[in-house]
Length: 337
Ligand SMILES: Nc1ncnc2c1ncn2[C@@H]1O[C@H](COP(=O)(O)OP(=O)(O)OP(=O)(O)O)[C@@H](O)[C@H]1O
Figure 1 (spheres, protein in one colour):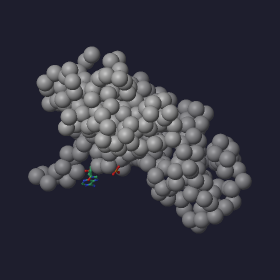
Figure 2 (cartoon, protein in one colour):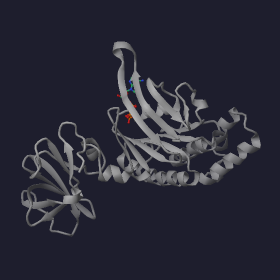
Figure 3 (cartoon, rainbow, N blue to C red):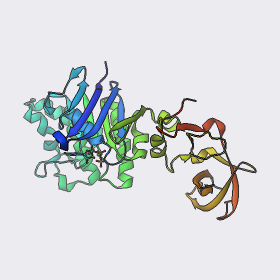
């Protein structure tokens, strides 16, 4: 039995002729203990999907199951989930301990049990020394940990994270990412995590659910999504710089798009002639931006490996044959290879 099932899930906002459909029939099975990241550009429907699991948005059509139960008609409190938001929404006048304990007090959990659960969560999150403080006496990262602590003490079946790291600076974000991974290893609770950041998605996910305009484009491991993108959308959304997508590459058939990642193009003595526009040094690597006919091509190569190409010169590049992808030019879907 899956921990979470999406069965033909549709969401429309508004009614009648003003109705706007924002989720177009999502089907997916999330396994027990899995960490799944829902990723996609702004407005693709990630938060809506998560909020339907949480019970904060009505499910227009289809069903969501949690732990084998249809939850469409259940209140958020009856769904056995805990949610961590972007703005952690801590109670400012309460101590860290009370913030974490609050939900349990409401549920009339005995005081000794509350203390045990809060102490355990505080231990995992290294908040033990901060339990008496008020939120304003904490750093952003510490507040985020309290918000996670509040979710942990409820011992839910499912954790839901809605862009919980987006208010943190880059360094703290990287640190908190590691903490979330550690937490997941220790607790093994099924988690859905929403982000628009593909790096965050790649590093955190056991599987990624890639959304585009309300449609699930792909649901797979980071390796599958990176190495076998199901569509040109996934190919260009995951990976930075994105995969080169070429309509007129040498050797390509009409009606197809050839995809090749910048790191899978080798600079060689012969091959595609590439007119160099500019190059960018990233440190260990260099990006070469060039033109092949009227299409832009990006090449990524190890710095120091070859002489940096000069702007306005012509170099030759060769795609690694086993790393070339083909897509249908009409639908954008991957063509089986
Ligand atoms: N209450 C609402 N009424 C009408 N349309 C809505 C409502 N909430 C969201 N939408 C629309 O639904 C679509 C999906 O929104 P959603 O917030 O789920 O996207 P998202 O992928 O989470 O975006 P972001 O990363 O910007 O938060 C958007 O086009 C949005 O404008």
